[in-house]
Amino acid sequence: MFEIVGKKELTHLVWQIEIKAPRIAKKRKAGQFVLLRMNEQGERIPLTIVNSDDEAGTITVIVQEVGKSTSILGGMKVGSSILDVVGPLGMPTHIENYGTVVCVGGGIGTAVTYPIGAALKEAGCKVISIVGSRSKDLLILEDEMRGVSDELHITTDDGSSGHHGFVTDVLGEFIKEGLKIDLVIAVGPIPMMRAVSEVTRPSAINTMVSLNPIMVDGTGMCGACRVTIGGENKFVCVDGPEFDGHLVDFEELVMRNRSYFKEEKMAVEEYTYHEGTRCYDKKGDD
Ligand code: FAD
Ligand code: FES
Ligand code: MG
Image (tube, rainbow, N blue to C red):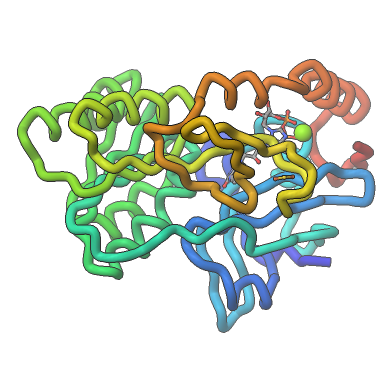
């Protein structure tokens, strides 16, 4: 069992959670994730390891409630325990001094961009970050991103903070101005990662994206997380999660992520109907 030792609401339905997991805390590297199963009947869900504290033996994850399992986790209290936390999984981000790196985070994707940005900064890169969200109150990790960036640019769809528009507007401007960019790392909703890859494609700027397919076993055996990269089959849990954005078949990823849409909707409705709340404390059965 893995005890929740800290919990903070970052914004509506987005939680930063510290979990006691000393062995994972010791080994984890930027870009890796864990698979969590909240209870005996629960499914496994992947979450990025945002941070770790080797001395305290804890890892930090940030979860956005989007369905049943993430809502169960979001409803868990400090002192309660998660049944399984498996990891660290996935290939760590390749970190070196690339020169100038633009780190793009969209919505909850900033939780993934932050540890990567921190590691790149430590390796000596010039880190220019662009963090976007729908509106000001949905922005997460702004101070943390500022702390690891040489420059931080905020964008909001409604103009409530920073540039009124999309992360791709700011990135497009940099390219137009002739800024020499050695690497772009983009993490966020699939349409955003796809759009970033299209913006950088004409100038052939090396672009990495962190993919978020459905995962089950996390060991490359079940095939749930299969994606097509440059015409080849890859498994995100073992070969990724980061891939060259110019080679990703985003269309297929979107289609495969929708595979269980009906069941996912039913799971949330049933859960809400039976419990009147999405809090695990009030009894959760998956
Ligand atoms: P559901 O209603 O079951 O599903 C909602 C949507 O989430 C689905 O349509 C599907 O696209 C996706 N999804 C469903 N089940 C899974 C699954 N088993 N694995 C992956 N995706 C699924 N979310 C965060 O909030 N914070 C993170 O740091 C984070 N890191 C991730 C890292 C990786 C490598 C991957 C692959 C995903 C990450 N996600 C993260 C997404 C998170 O795993 C999903 O939001 C979660 O599994 C949804 O579960 P649910 O039961 O609450 O929602
Ligand atoms: Fe099963 Fe990747 S999650 S192969
Ligand atoms: Mg689910």
